[in-house]
Every structure is written in structure tokens, then in C-alpha cells.
Image (tube, rainbow, N blue to C red; front, side, top):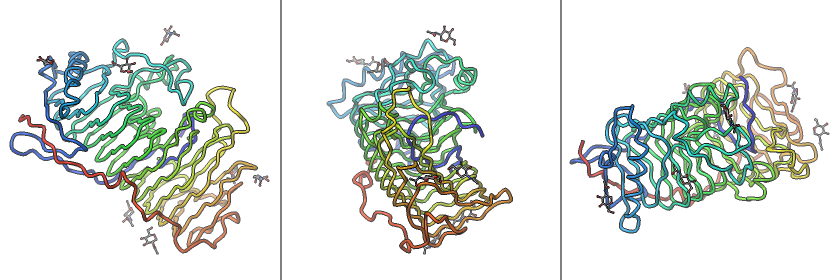
Length: 458
Ligand SMILES: *[C@@H]1O[C@H](CO)[C@@H](O)[C@H](O)[C@H]1NC(C)=O
Ligand SMILES: *[C@@H]1O[C@H](CO)[C@@H](O)[C@H](O)[C@H]1NC(C)=O
Ligand SMILES: *[C@@H]1O[C@H](CO)[C@@H](O)[C@H](O)[C@H]1NC(C)=O
Ligand SMILES: *[C@@H]1O[C@H](CO)[C@@H](O)[C@H](O)[C@H]1NC(C)=O
Ligand SMILES: *[C@@H]1O[C@H](CO)[C@@H](O)[C@H](O)[C@H]1NC(C)=O
Ligand SMILES: *[C@@H]1O[C@H](CO)[C@@H](O)[C@H](O)[C@H]1NC(C)=O
Ligand SMILES: *[C@@H]1O[C@H](CO)[C@@H](O)[C@H](O)[C@H]1NC(C)=O
């Protein structure tokens, strides 16, 4: 499998991964409206058809979405508003959300992303990246975006959003892009975000990209893109704090969940780390600003390149620290544990060769894996070793392509306990019986969702 060049330090769970977890069925239809759970309910409601929307899959609804959201933004300070996308196929170009706002997709609603490039506004490169990932100039707007928002919900009764990405993937493969491909959903500089109970298909590039944002709940999402579709990462929190990702099924062409924080000198300058992140009942997971306090548990991965991966390089700077992962059930993969300090892609030649990333406090416990080729490839940076690695209670069953050197360790230090096959000299068997996992809970874990209603009967 050819890996497309990737840019950042990353903490990745599930590379080219199929992730299978139970989705949540938390939407039901009751007396005349759909009931759903959200961080906040809304006083005002409108339906896309009120604004001239046509759900025939042919007519563009770009104006309908933009007019609806502009109109509904007037209710922000009066209880907020929800926009219902009713049954139908709603072709649209990009639109921006507003604060104190809910976008709700009926279960038979499908939003189809336009393949007409003239519909897609151009945006400058992100400050923590310095350039676009597909092309140095700017980037196309995401399909659904928001900037400087508070309290925004994108949810539905498992309604669908189809990014119709094939058009963009082909241009990417033919090197015809002079701007970076759109993401499906991107929220920037925003606080209190919920994205839940939706089926997301075929994004042109990343599916969900919250950046420079906080207090984010993502749950009950089914995400699906063909194997090998370029950079179709599932969920990529980037320079975000207080993030809860749970009960998602993700099948993607690239990473399942990837935690990031910028790229080389641009990320270092912006200096917004990703931290306080809880990931559970999912499979899958990137940095220049830093990544810390990530707690991931109850992960299933089937047929992936690796289960969890941390990737960085000289020049990336930043840190990855206090990462806790436990209870993973893994089937069919190249590496169970993969950390690399030679992930050598850079935005430009101006990276600082003295900017060494600090990778420390990485804990893995209770892992069962089968059909594995290599147990671990842990490759730190010379004179900048990855330290305080702890691995306990791990049972790995190898396949026929197994390699002789199962634990290939360079420039790393730490301890292990109850791990088969036996580990490397740099990670001796003398750790605690169980590697640590935090017992306190993060504030984002205790956010309770309210029971809301669309108030519209279909
Ligand atoms: C939008 O907002 C105005 C009030 O500002 C209202 O009069 C109008 O009917 C609303 N709805 C539509 C569909 O334009
Ligand atoms: C969304 O907002 C951003 C920044 O506020 C702006 O640059 C962009 O053009 C807007 N996109 C659309 C589709 O209106
Ligand atoms: C952008 O790419 C297209 C081909 O996809 C090309 O025709 C066009 O000239 C390019 N524009 C710029 C500004 O490079
Ligand atoms: C792990 O997954 C395999 C196959 O998906 C399943 O048969 C097995 O019961 C699971 N084990 C645990 C401990 O969940
Ligand atoms: C070891 O990990 C397995 C899952 O792989 C789990 O079922 C078992 O309870 C763990 N053992 C201990 C002592 O925690
Ligand atoms: C071990 O890993 C290093 C890089 O860290 C690589 O160059 C080497 O080929 C690997 N050795 C084996 C036997 O796989
Ligand atoms: C890093 O690993 C390489 C390859 O094993 C080794 O030659 C070098 O001495 C190591 N650096 C340090 C500082 O241990």
C-alpha cells in the first residue's frame, strides 16, 4: 500500500483502517417530530424548503442553504434555530454555519456535495500549516464550514452527507490540483461543537477537521470512503482541546482518527496543542504544536496498516506526551505498534533542524492482536529518543508472513510486562503489572446531552 506523503507529527489510530464499533441509535420519532440529543435545543425551526430548496439531486441548493442560515442567524441571541433538511437529495456547494444553530438531517435526507468547482470558494492556507497539503497555494472551502462560532450542532436521524469525492480523488491522482481539496466539515476557532448521528460518505479529503477549537463531541458517526481513496481521514482534531469521540464506525482510505497540531515551523509558531482528548468504542488516530493527554479505549481495528501510530520528524518540534491506550482488539495488520521519528515531509526548506519533537509517556495496555506481520517498529530519533514507553498485557499472534525481528527498536526507552512475543532489549520486561490509565475524568466526558425535538412532522 502506497502511503501518500503526510505532513505532521501525528498520533494515529488505525492506518488505512476499517473500524467497527456499535453506533448509537439515539434518535426516535415521537409525536410529530424527531427526537434527538444535543448540547442545546433550539427555540426556532425552519425547513430547507422554506428557502426554496429542491431535493431532486439535480438542482443546486447552495443559495437555499446560505439564505436559510443567514436568515436563521438572527435568532442566535433568542434561543437559537434549527434548520431541518427533509427527505430528498440535496445537491449543494459549500455553506457556512452560524452560532447557536443546529443542522438536522432527516433519516431519508442526503446532502450531495457539488462537483462544480465554480461553486467552491477559495480560502488561504491554514496558519499552522503555511501551505496547502495538495498544492502550495490556498485551498478550497470545506463543504460545511464555520469560523468563530459558539454552540453549533450537526446531527440527524442518521441522514447522509455524500462528498462525491471521486471527482477530487481523480484530480489528485492526475496531479491536476492547484489548490488543496475540500474537507467535508471544518470548524475553525469555534467552541461547543457537536457532530453526531450521521452517515458521512466519500469526502474529497478529510471528513471532519475541527481546528483551533474546543469542547467538541463527536458520536454515533458512520464514516465510509473506499480503501485507497487519498487522505480520506475520518476525524482529525487539529490544535483542539477537550474533545470526546465515541461510538463511531469508520472505514477510510487513510487514518481513522488522526490527532494533529500543525506542520513544522508554522505549527510551532501558532503553538496550539491538541490536548484532553478521549476516544472510546472506536478504532483508530497526528503535531507541531504538541499532542498530550489522549485517552483511547475499547478500540477495534480490522485489516489496518497499524493499530496506533505516532509519527514525527526532526524539524517538527512540539511534543506527543501522556498518551494512554487500553483494550484494543486487533485483527490483520502489518504493525501493532508503530512510532517513527523519520517521517520526513516538510512544508518548505525553512524548517528548523534543531526543532526536535519530544515523545514521552506513551502507554499501551490490554491488547489482543491476531494475523500480524511485525509486532512493533519503534524508531526514535538519534540524540532525541522516545522515552517512558510502557506496554503491558499484550498478546500478539503472528501470521505466516511474520518477520524474524518482531520488535525492531531504535532510540527508544521504556518498560514492558506480560507481552508476547518477547520485546526488545530497549524495552525490558520490568514494568508495572499494568501500565497506567488515568482514573480522573475529563470535563468533556461529563457534558450531558439534552433531549430535543425537530418539531416538524414528515
Ligand atoms: C427570513 O427572515 C425574515 C425576518 O428577518 C422573515 O420576514 C422571513 O420571512 C424569513 N424567512 C424566509 C423564508 O425568508
Ligand atoms: C465562509 O466564511 C469564510 C470566513 O468567514 C469566508 O472566507 C468564506 O468565503 C465563507 N464561505 C461561504 C461559502 O460563504
Ligand atoms: C489550475 O489547474 C488547471 C488544471 O487543472 C489549469 O488549467 C490552470 O491553469 C491552473 N491554474 C493556475 C493558476 O495554476
Ligand atoms: C476480538 O475480535 C475477534 C474478531 O473480530 C472476536 O472473535 C473476539 O471475540 C474479540 N475478542 C475480544 C476479547 O473482544
Ligand atoms: C489482558 O488483556 C485482555 C484483553 O486483551 C483482557 O481481557 C484481560 O482482562 C487483561 N488482563 C488483565 C490482568 O487485565
Ligand atoms: C528496523 O527498523 C529500521 C528503521 O528504524 C530499518 O531501517 C530496518 O530495516 C529495520 N530492520 C528490520 C530487520 O526490519
Ligand atoms: C540511535 O539508533 C542508531 C541505530 O540503532 C544507533 O546507531 C545510535 O547510536 C542511536 N543513538 C543514540 C543516541 O543512542
